[in-house]
Amino acid sequence: MKILGIETSCDETAAAVVEDGARILSNVVVSQIDIFAEYGGVIPEVAARSHLEVIMPVVKKALADAKCDWDDIDAIAVTHAPGLLGSLLIGTLTARTLAILHDKPLYAVHHLKSHVYANWLTGESPIFPLLALVVSGGHTQILYMRAHNQFEIVGTTHDDAVGECFDKVAKILGLPYPGGPAIARAALSGDANKYKLPHPKVEGLDFSFSGLKTAVLRAVQKELGLPISYPSHDLKNHLSRQQVADFAASFQKTAVGILCEKLALALEQYPDVQSVVIAGGVSANKALREALLEAYFPAPSLSGDNGAMVAVAAYYEIISGVKPTDPYSLNIYPRISIEK
Ligand code: KG4
Ligand code: ZN
Image 1 (cartoon, helix red, strand yellow):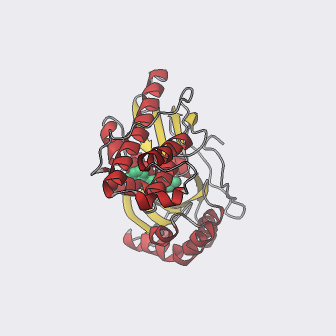
Image 2: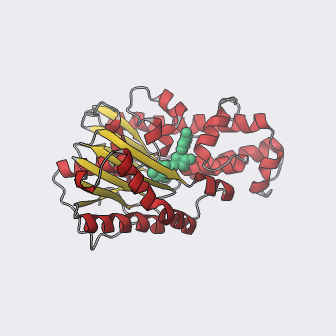
Image 3: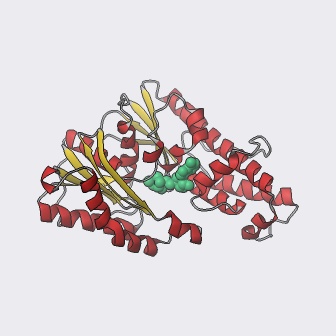
């Protein structure tokens, strides 16, 4: 079964063809990072316009790279939630139109499901029951999965997502958007033990990352001997390269430590768990990979947003008996939970 997966929930326009939920026949990702690096973050209206410009060429290239024409495609899958409203609209409108035009069954997939299912493209299938640590720009959650397509949220962030925290700390340090890769790069020449940053005190398996961002801000102000009223956007102009590297390394170590601590607690609470999978953009982080050697990680190229993971998630929905959605009425849900 060949599925065309389409993903446009944030700032990547992506399409891929995956066979039987396992073999990637093509995987095309057009990133808008270059546009948003200039602004220091995503501007939703600009993202939607960029999706609109490239979505059809991206879909056509995905088909061409896979050496497929429409007759070869068995189903279309698209991200319909959660994400930026305008971005989700472009992807779903494209998928709906193509499904009607080419008479294909259409599957609407939750973005976090797709990130989790990127772990089924590693050549080895994780074993149930499992825990999924979702670490993206918009979400930080621990999910318990008893079987395919069954998701129970057992921990979630009370405020910022960990990826968002990487992005905000990068901004304080004067590192470019997206912050995650920039922090990881800067951290390579930094001392991770230079600055002591606190782990938040959050009950159970929940997270909180906004305090960590503020802790970095305060530590930078203290290091520079500047008052807390000093404009945070100007701090970067006073930091040396080494200070930036040391802050990046200390922050990364703390963020990774918090994730590992909660995952260890989750494993204590769910002793029947057979595997752990890590999902979402932050799963590209090398320090996190080195700290969790036993866990499944997607290939780094599939950690971020892509169409292949959407196709795999839809494949396992089909296997689980989910029926296709009506292309005439498919809606988008910018904020809906994976449990809905
Ligand atoms: O999953 P994703 O591509 O988009 C969302 O669904 O949100 O995740 C994007 C997030 C950004 O916050 C980005 O800074 C972070 O993933 N990220 C990383 C790394 N690569 C991307 N964070 C830490 N280390 C990385 N190497
Ligand atoms: Zn994502």
